[in-house]
Length: 126
Image 1 (cartoon, rainbow, N blue to C red):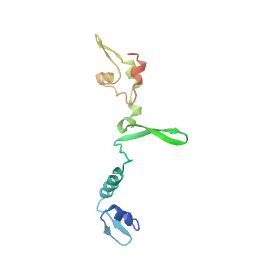
Image 2 (image 1 turned 60 degrees about the vertical axis):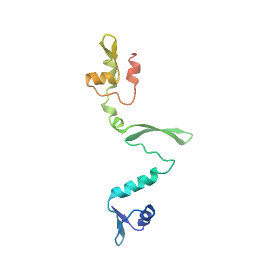
Image 3 (image 1 turned 30 degrees about the horizontal axis):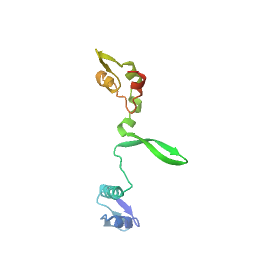
């Protein structure tokens, strides 16, 4: 990883070793820089890391961000592949006394899973 001077002073503050060249510094590997930065940031008391999470929406109140709607990243990436209508249509009794709905329908029929909401179960009235 190449860092142009005078940004090498920041590396000094972080305690990251590098090789000095004429106009730049060379860090052994970008992962060394990234992991050091992450460890310093995560050590702060007001910072939380949400791994594999996507921000889907912001909650804004009084001209400021008051919250964030998050979801598992893989679910967010597949919103268009989920089959809410099929889940509702296929809600049914599979054996006397056992009704499947929601993710269980997807499991039994091999359909795409419901994803982030349970609306299909609610409107299926089961």
